[in-house]
Amino acid sequence: MLKNLLDTSADISSKLMSRLAFCGEAASVYGERPRIVLDLLIKQGMSIWLIMIIVMALSFFVQHMLQSRFHKYSQVRLGNGMSGADVARKMLQDNGIYDVKVVSVQGTLTDHYNPATKTVNLSGSVYSGCSVAAAAVAAHECGHAVQHAVGYAPLRMRSALVPVVSFASNIVQWILLLGVLMINVFPGLLWFGIALFAMTTLFSIITLPVEINASMRAVNWLNSAGITDYRTSPLAVDALKWAAYTYVIAAIGSIATLLYYIGLARRD
Image (cartoon, rainbow, N blue to C red; front, top):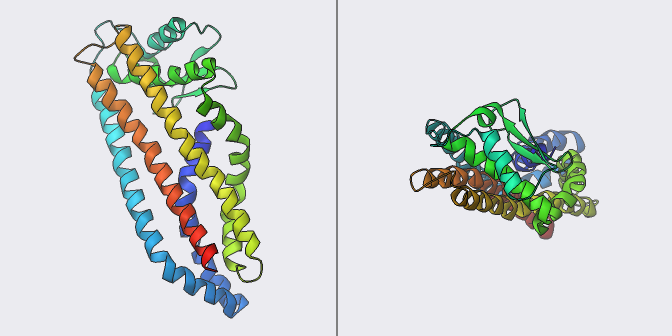
């Protein structure tokens, strides 16, 4: 569920922009007031469209680089022949964690830690793979398990936001669109939508230290446990770096969209 929330949070911004076309249809039905709002959106919208195009382009680039790096480093085998599942179990044991299971899940790059079920879920290529990429991803997900075990504050904050973001992500797009249409009649509706969207933005921001810290734990443990060496350690760092960039881009896109709607509300 956490992975779905992250995908939703990153996706809401682009969906909001595409659905502004609905305002044009509403203008022809409900008269001049929505048309005035649409004109305002057109005037202000150029900058946000430019920002969103840049963010989307960066997102595609980072995703491409992440998949490229993962494929490249999947060809570099570990000297000890350990699989991703072996690496995960050893890292958990070395950190005194014995109540977390390591399981295989379907898909590519679908790896995640589920704190509710206490499972490290690894995609097939990571679970069975004996490569640097598999080790890096497996250790990263175990980094989240370690965070959970030690009560890492940003992870606790993100977990607390899950039910709020789950609720907000289902309705925020329509609340904001209605708020824009009714900005002169009921401006409070737009501010309510902004407050809901701010929760998804906060979720994206809090995700950054959670993911970066998990990667740092992974790299440090891989080196100290002798899983990686002077040759393979930089490759693991590079793979995790590009994974972290995906969360950075998602946060930037969410912040840009939030600021756009705040500016729209304040201008009114």
